[in-house]
Length: 331
Image 1 (spheres, rainbow, N blue to C red):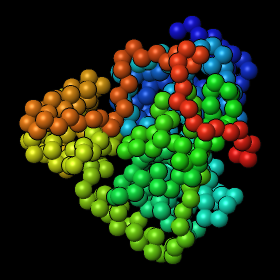
Image 2: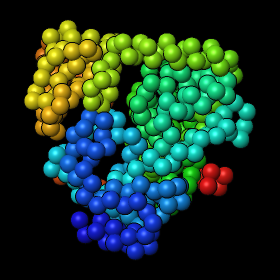
Image 3: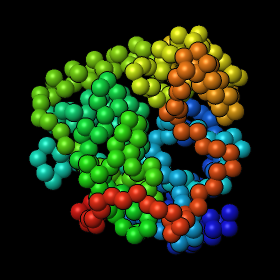
Image 4: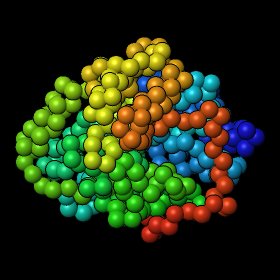
């Protein structure tokens, strides 16, 4: 794609110290261990550097794909002509400016965030202690477990809003949080960090709750195998894993991809899975569950289509309206 190639050349010329990897295999980054090369993979060192990368892409009509720990995504084996921007170096974590709050950049792991909250006697993030993602991805998809969700604790979110080329803060009430969704999925922006509003509590009590949740997770989930977390979202009035099990699909295998024999809600890589294996596996499960129950399962894993291109056409498309205001405190 001409715009992407031009942007890459400008970034290399003007940002020589940036960690920029060309033709980077995504199987090296994704928890499912599947995925071909992307044209470029950038790892900015801080918010300023990330903003500069996005500026050059925007000026050339290209949208990046911003990712954290890549724990719920699958890339085609043939690769994609796109740039991925990793938030892995955005790891600032501190107590917030107001009482009982924490500010965390997008690349902070949810486990580290929960531990930091515990150590500072702040409760509300125990549910996140075993989720293998980062703050950015957790906010984007309103991650949750054991009755808790990000929407319960997010006070505000800091985003880089591409049309205005500005860091912007969005109030938690304006984030459009729904079950495993947020308004950020429809907006031309990248999540840079978030402020969490928590409740004071005894660190030992918080730690005990985290330990109990993580023991349940270890006992019930296939944590010893490559996966992308829960394969399907929870349908109304039930659980995807229970439906899949009831339909006799636990252990169902396509090539190297399998519905976990330990937890039917997980798809796992038995060692040689391909992109096509995963797609065929999940499609079969959806068809079979619907045939037997008339319930449609919605994938929770983000499967990027073959040939996907990311064009920055924000001038032509309508943007979801949020209450936005420029901030400087997070730079």
